[in-house]
Image (cartoon, rainbow, N blue to C red):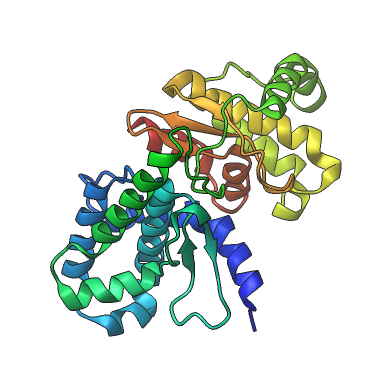
Length: 292
């Protein structure tokens, strides 16, 4: 049985992924998830069109969609009124978002808002709460002009691209790349082109043939060099920039490349290497999916 504290930890950790899944796979391309009141109205309209009624919230086939909406509504409210995710043990529709304490407002359940939207069918339930939080912020700032609501950081917030850890990692990988080549693949043609990715995949399969070996600390130097090389192939050929989320634990904070290609996509190279162990040809296909 998952207790509320554990459920809340998982939710905070995965909320960014839930919103990303909603944006990429559950909504039409024209949707703009910019954390605005207008975006809430658009998402609510899609909820009303897609779900037949309250029973659909419990449909396993709709859980990713519903979780994505819950995550997006909560994060949008908190960007306006601060606060944090909470998971009270007695709450009927967790998780809830609690606004900044100075606003004097009660916590809100985004899941309960979905139920209200399905009953009202007016497309205004999400944005009504947003504007209520907005008015409360304005009231507080009348007495405290410099005050800003404080939002709990979550995985939905963009990490800092100027991470000192990332800067040091990139410098170390670039400085030691020649040694990495001499140690692991002196015969290869490592020219940072897409055509070199099949050779990289073959090398990874030879040195770390299983996911367990890929993540074994004894192979850290090899894997980090391979991940850096793959990321540089993507960045140099398709555009983008490196980033790293320093808010995560070390075993989850892998450097990634964001804003790749025309769709400004994101790739975490170490995960792409892991997938390549299970799916031959993945690295070149991974690159080409961003280039197309």
